[in-house]
Length: 103
Image (cartoon, rainbow, N blue to C red; front, top):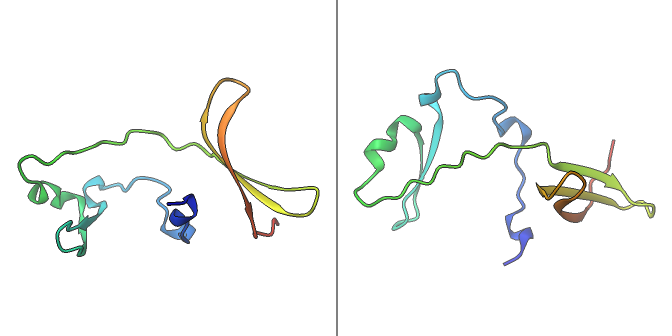
């Protein structure tokens, strides 16, 4: 498995910039592990989908503006993705060369 296996195009318009006013109206993708079928549901459907023994994992992390773009002296373009700050002056980051043209 490679990190590149997880790269996909996600149009900016499909990325939520703020929570919905009616939080219960949030969308929910439901994957049936046995059949592989995918359903488009709403978050209010969640209690009816849960079964005894199911495990819920809550992600309460905050998103930071961590994607940086740059140009190398050779003209190549790079992307840095900061995973986490190690201290005030160091960060753990991923770096990859991109074909993107900076504007």
